[in-house]
Image 1 (cartoon, rainbow, N blue to C red):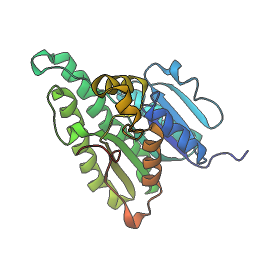
Image 2: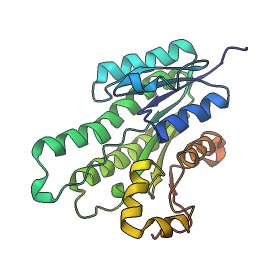
Image 3: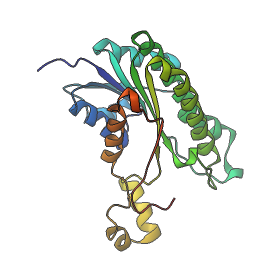
Image 4: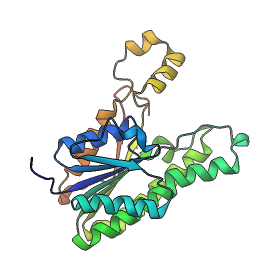
Length: 240
């Protein structure tokens, strides 16, 4: 087997979207380094071109070391920041600790990831840095003050970084997922709200994780003459 000539690092390689991104880029011939909290849950992914470990994306030194590990395998072609941190609390029940923790996970960790990826890519004048956003980053809904603030900050940071780094050859993009992603937990909540029969009648109401991975691959494949900064993806039936 030919050794990969480039690597991809996925920060926030969770069970669904993150795992799908890892599999997609590995299938396209990249060495993929996956990081997440509770790294033992990465076991089903590991093997062949996929490596991984536990990672606390809120710790700058850990992020720096993690990206250096990917770079040591092969030159880093893409970094995907995919940390979630979606929580819902009424405003008066959102504690200081919750607000700070959500901001650290979804905004500060994203800043650190983009900064450290840029430090590795800038000497080569090429690379891709993608961050996973959410509808909350565009509009704050009731009960999501902490999450909306963090995701809006992530979006603004990514936009600022894109305007700085694009002219230097680094493609920064922000992917807005405006939908429920098809997981067992989300599916159960939707069934509670609209009923199992209604969900079965709308098979594309929820977004498969593989569709998100496909969107990232499409962004990765864009030529320098036609880069996208922000892409919104949603199922055809989603209200927006």
